[in-house]
Length: 250
Ligand code: 13P
Image (cartoon, rainbow, N blue to C red; front, side, top):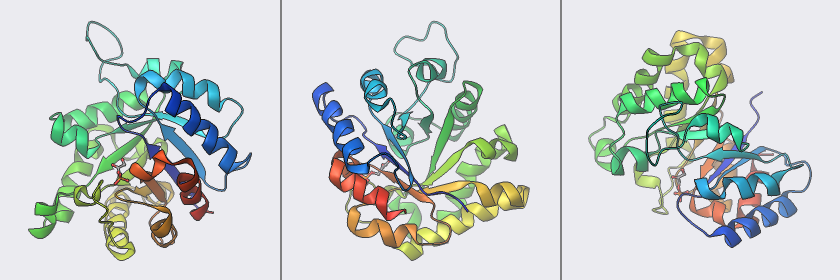
């Protein structure tokens, strides 16, 4: 049985004080034993504060991006080893905002995925189609291309230490959530691609849904057979609401 994972992607929001009160509110709202696995991904500069505030809690820490290189003259970049050093367990790779706003290609995303595992982090690999791609009915081709780039570069065994997130671009920050059936269809497709390489690994990998997840729709989404949790943006910035989403996975 795959344990539901709910991860909060705080993107470039908040301040030091807001991060502190969000972590405090979340640990208080969830109590000692959250029903699902929970992770928060604050901006880089607040990771150290968040790690300290999360000490003793079961909530895991994640980062939103990492460098491909392990160290060196790469001004402005943050290495995976540094993220491990400050207590990160997860790192998001291939978020659609990185792909579309910062030009990350499938090749770059695959390299970041491998870098994450090399540096001891669990990548949360994001895939998803744009509205235009969905309307052209090429959703499956897009997802397969994005996934194949990683499979060709890192092999199926790597998915024993990875999480996949299906984030349809048209549902991110728009309030327009994929229906549970739409999510299930793509999640089943993703699992099928992985299963063609290894049934057992495909069955154990968690596939999260992301895109306008909120307390009112989380339960229905998480009840689908191949939806193993959520990657939550906007709604994870409210401790009470995010805790409710986490409980929807119990
Ligand atoms: P929203 O939940 O704000 O739609 O964002 C989803 C997302 O991009 C999480 O990574």
